[in-house]
Image (cartoon, rainbow, N blue to C red; front, side, top):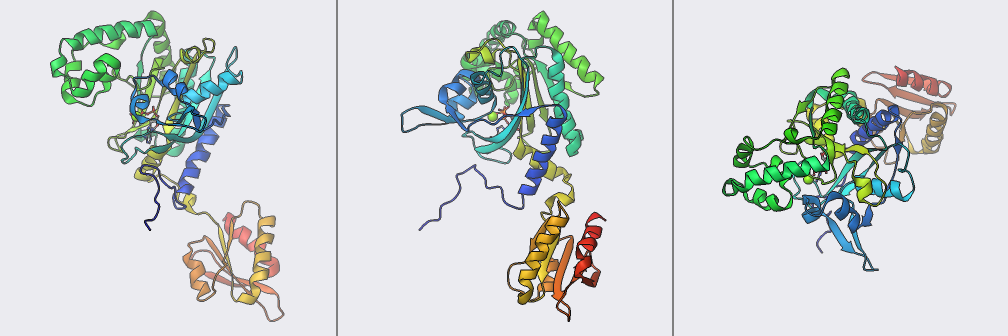
Length: 422
Ligand code: ATP
Ligand code: MG
């Protein structure tokens, strides 16, 4: 019988990889905590309409990337392709949004039916930050500063660049869209196939076409910044001033539009040139219209999501994960012969009790060549337990190359503590 395998594009995260995931997640938790953000957890499955109404019917995600199915009650459900829509739905449903401010973050798997490749998967993971109820540019600056602090903590700040743009108000964008369509309609024969299709459905997406001819054509096209309304222009210059003051470097990218329909004013991406085509590690912006669009009262909002897999690829590529992160235990504890196993287990419990935080792994298999085997585990501390003539326990302790023999039972915990903290 053929063995059952994982679904294409959906990865197991194996024990050798999880320490780096945990390291990234812990670092993120510390950073969001430092800004006073609260965690929210949403279901993985939502009504399909939630994503159609928020992300937009003619976006790549809704047109071709969603995992949509009917449940036994014939309801159309979708595995969430992103977190913002669910977060707004949850906030609205539980009265978290009206007339108050919220700073939220979440993490978890997202699902998109894409062509799997390095940095692009069908189940992938995001960490997202969403803020509600704050309209001015200081909160746009805060979420960007939060992400920059995270890059700094992770040691990748030099490898990422912040790209920044403003999409303006809905009205300004509609006016620009009309001008862009008029310009491109007249040159339709020079556009790539995808862009021709988008000319009708989602013309702004043509701005980030990967096609060289299309990009060349855009050099002479109307630019969005010329169409910005005064309020958006003001908002954007305040944001830039705040980022300047915070010492955060950015590049203005007038063609940055983002693939989701709900953005207005600020949009940004953190990109790296170290990962090939999948270079965006974090993306976000302002979506003041979304809460209302989903049936709530008008509520300003700004947020971003980062791709955990891409960040981990970047950490690995730059080799910036502290080596201690990969070690999942501090002490490897083994008995010299089988009759001592009960006492070794008791000793391990005693160590866990006396030295909180110490990670003790007990050897629970055959004892042939145990001394060599225990040291091959790579544990920072190896303790091989034997019995003395008067039936006391004693240990041989390795910490690096030099063993220390015959440490008496009464001294074991103190000795281990000393080398552990050294
Ligand atoms: P891309 O242009 O790379 O498809 P996107 O614009 O669709 O990205 P968003 O919806 O803004 O991406 O998601 C935010 C982040 O989540 C991305 O910047 C990326 O880091 C990550 N991400 C998105 N799709 C995937 C995927 N299929 N596999 C892995 N990471 C992803
Ligand atoms: Mg995409």
